[in-house]
Length: 343
Ligand code: PEP
Ligand code: MN
Image 1 (cartoon, rainbow, N blue to C red):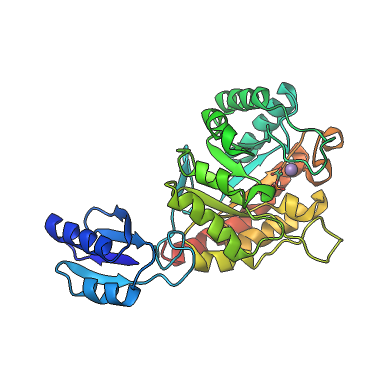
Image 2 (cartoon, rainbow, N blue to C red):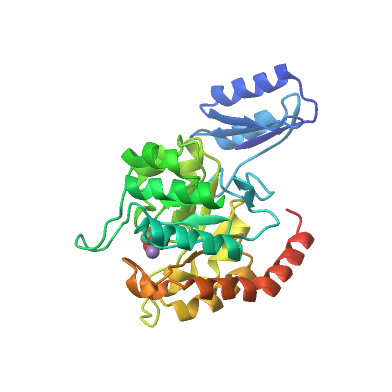
């Protein structure tokens, strides 16, 4: 339930409403807003009776039930889009934010060369995995903390913010010391212990859609993070597994407008993991911009042929520069669209 108080409702009125919510067996989850206070209540109880009672309490403007199974991430709870701020950039606002970098952090020279090039081309965040979730245990697993240190060095040298994956709840503290955004990989979208730990991480999270997950499941995983205390969640469509084998995954482009309808959280698209092939990345990136994504994540490597992971879907530094240039007219249209739609 969401209870909106009238403008200028008194402290006593707010306290009374909170007490009534608790009497009905619900928990007051959060109270936000300064001028107009909005109270969120969660739990199980007699909703209809509780709503009727609260609607007639002094100082209450409206009391509504959130019908979606996910509450805090739903548009019913918050109609205006959320901004997730990362350094100087903000996802969900009037800038299309591009995150770029190698699949894995491999070496200082590989990372620095990539970081400098993607910064020059207009990326705002540097990506790079230090902890790698690999399908086979015999594949490169990442440089771990050494990789995180290289990412921090790249941030110092380029000013780019860092997004990197955290794979287990035990690593959230360590990765948070180095990262600006914690990436949760597709394979971990329903790692509930990890999602709960992210609630207390104090850093924005980018949650990638599981390869066989529905949009409802994605939103419920986001709800775990938000309901455990972290409102700064970015969702990422990265392709889902279908019967099609021409691409690594199938990019679910409709996920973008569907998510924009259902949630106020920013939505990013990763055309590299969605397609698995670098030749397809530019077209899918354009499609994501046209569909109204808030951000893009792209894999870039100075020499994809030598990449430890995901070489076939990584753009060269030049191809990334071309992609950014070729996206400009699409981004200009995107901006005009944003200006028309109230945030
Ligand atoms: C990645 O970003 O390199 C990655 C492992 O992505 P995903 O979790 O989407 O497969
Ligand atoms: Mn990858």
